Length: 219
Image 1 (cartoon, rainbow, N blue to C red):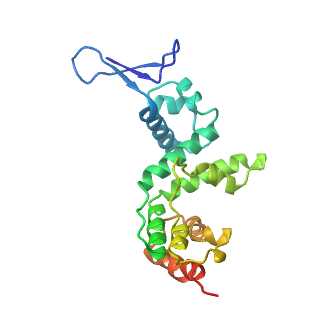
Image 2 (tube, one colour):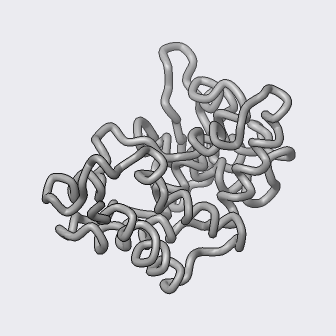
């Protein structure tokens, strides 16, 4: 047998005994920091996709992760926070690294829509819908729920529009908050409407027929 100790706090070690895969002497394995966090969030997301929001429990997640409920509760006080964190983790994992800037507004927008398009849209719709419905009685809007689900980053995210303004490709006087978010607003609308990733044609239509013409107009 081997001992798997997750994120032990002084005097409150959480120990899970798991079968050993060798005949060697017992070994002690620790999961801490990002490794532990990733393992926990992966277990939450897998449990959510298997049973849904309402049937998900801390006990089941802890069992799937091979840890204790205390380890989960130290990080997330309730199921809303737990599922929202797992959704952010899953979204970031599915998308992978952000695309590198191309030096072109059009190509940057296409690259970032393709990047967003890697998401498992059915699971993300389910997460947003279930959490949103659960919080509706508290007056929380779906826009706020969506913000909860979005991955966060400690570094500033590259903006194709800001880069285009710096190159002189876009007049900043034309950029309103609604126009700045239009490409991804249309992307989300298409995803929610069809419950599937966008086609290349849809991405091109959003960028070439709507967003770029509005951003680069000369009047």
